[in-house]
Length: 277
Image (cartoon, rainbow, N blue to C red; front, side, top):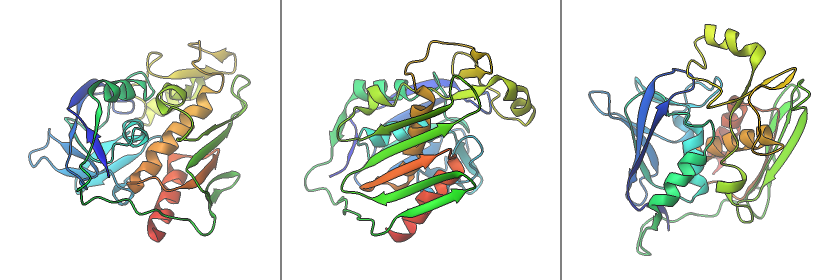
C-alpha cells in the first residue's frame, strides 16, 4: 500500500549549480505512478521519471533526463519524499534545477509534514514485494566505495575523510525504523571548500551557492558556523545517498555503507541493485 501527499505544496528558490530561480510544486499522484517530474516550462511538458534508468550526469549532484528534458540536483527532494514514505508524487518544476533552499532537506520535510500524507486504499493494485539481497555488492574507486550488504532491515552508514581539520574523518548511521529522518538527517546542509569555489564557478558549477545555502570550510575552520550537528557533513552525504538510492522506487532492506563516495558511485550501486531486483 503506497502513499502520496494529501494536497499540493510548492517551494521556490535558487538552484545550486545553475543559479536560476525555480518553483517546485509537489502534487498527489495515483497509486503506482511513482515519483516523477514534469517540466512545465517546456512546450510538451515532458515527464521525467525519478528512476535510476533516467540518470544523466552525476557531477556534484544527480541529474535526471528524458529525451532533451533534464532536471538536476534532485537528491534532497527525493530523499525527503522517500524517507517520508511517499511512493507516488507528481512534481512540477518550471526550470532545470530543483531549488537548493537552505542546502538541506529540512524545508522539504517541513512542507510534507504540513500538508500530510495519505495512504492509498487497501484495494490499491500497488504492492511492494520484499527484496532480499543474497550477496554483498561492492562498488569501488581507489579507496572510495559504496556497498549493499544483506540485512533484515534498511540501514545507511556513511563515512567521509577530508584534509580539513574541522571535518577530518566522520561517520554517521541512520536506521529508518528507529531514527526520525526529519530531525536526524534532513537538517544537514551541503558543504563546500573555500579554496575550490573559484575553480568550480569557472567550470559553470555552484553558480547559486552562497553562505546562506551551504556550509563553507577552509583550512582555518568553518567560514559560516555554527553547525547543526558535530558531524553535519557526514549526515549530509548520507542524505544524498538516500536520495540517490530512492531512484530504485522502493528502498530495499539492505545495509548501505559508503565511504568517501560520490553521486557517481551511489548511482552505480543503485543501477547494480536494479539489475537484480
